[in-house]
Figure 1 (spheres, rainbow, N blue to C red):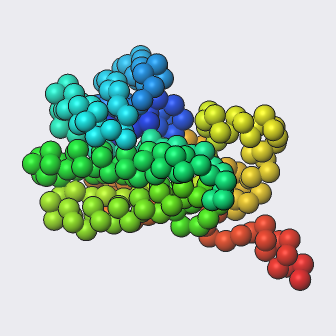
Figure 2: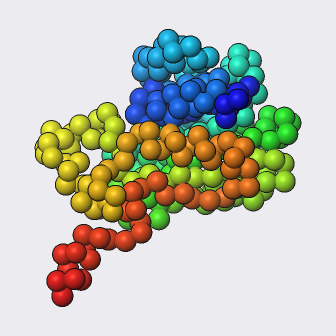
Length: 264
């Protein structure tokens, strides 16, 4: 028996990158998967990939910053696949920048996508999870939520997501709902932001790797494996945690140690 047999998982931002990898992993582990994305073409591609491998999957379109669209997408998922057992809040957006030069509307948009969007999804699923006796929620936060690595609005939102995770875990633990956060470091994906950096410097990932104690940046599957575990019954006594999946980045600044402390 697989981890997620007879379970339904909804993953936001599952049209590409980390979200697609999470959808693939959960489907391989037996879940019926609802792929939520604002990009219908990419979302349908993920569904077609899953279905071609024999998995049960549907696409639901929603802009997570709009609660009515989230409600409709969750209702369609429940009607088609059944009650949602696992929600993975993965969808995210960042324009980087700095505090001084960041346009006000850009700040508001990033907070909307990265904080209000996950809250909308949590709000939409809580009642049905309570009625069904429980469930699991996993928020994809970031190492930026506990250390500053640039991108002020994104970092602020991810810090708030960790607090929101603790809130849900505390208030709904007695209802059978677990809520955890995963904190990825740099993850090599097909995101436009990464491609822009690669265009500027083809060796960007090699340069980043030296900051990570394990010697490489992350891959989407690294995050997907952590999601699969935390959302499963194997993690039934784990709730309210913020789990770094960062190759040891938060453990210490090894480059600083090697190049400054030891030399001194």
